[in-house]
Amino acid sequence: MTGNTPFLPEHDVHELIVRAQAGDREAFARVIEQVQPFVYKLARQYARRSGSAPVEDLVQVGLLAAVKSVPCFRTQAGVKFISYVGVSARRAIHRAAFGWKPLPQAGSDGSDLIRELADERDGQTPAADTETAAEIRNLIASHLGDRERRLIGQRFGLDGADPRTYAELAVVTGTSRQNVQQLVERALRRLRTAMGTRDHFRSASGDA
Image (cartoon, rainbow, N blue to C red; front, top):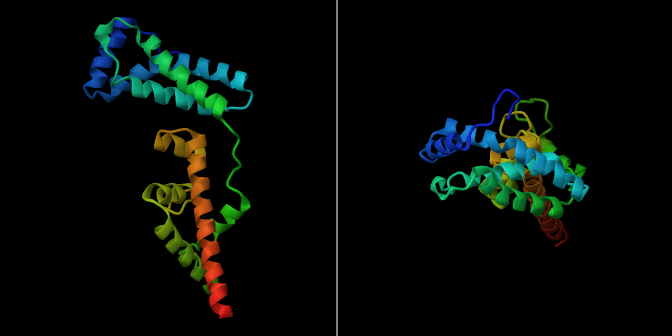
């Protein structure tokens, strides 16, 4: 919520929720704006208490809880929406804050693995690198699910667009930056394992 966005009376918030539940996206966005300051405050509190969880991750977790609360909220129950959101947002942020563990960024092995995917627009790419790139693309197609393939493509720019950060992917997928990073790291581990298995069989075949 910006400084120019005023807090609305609870009656008006309930009216927005009714419209949001009927499919009004603008009303939905305005409802979430009303709880943003609370979520940010909560995230900062838990970030300090946990001592390590990034505030931006906790904010995303809290806002996601708020988004999930809108369809379930009953305006006739006589409960303030902020109080209703507070329960789920606090629980989600608490769980994320104290369950958070720092993850390494995609390491050099993962980055090097993906860099082997030759840019087909580069006519100077050596034939050996082009062959390796084709093999890695085949491994991606064979060993990763649709969601993992999409995330790897977006993370490293294999979809033709600029590479995206974990924070940008979190917005696109509607989850936390940490969760996106875990998915990407898991996909890279599966690719490295697949490549190791492939090389092992090649070596065994050569020795036979």
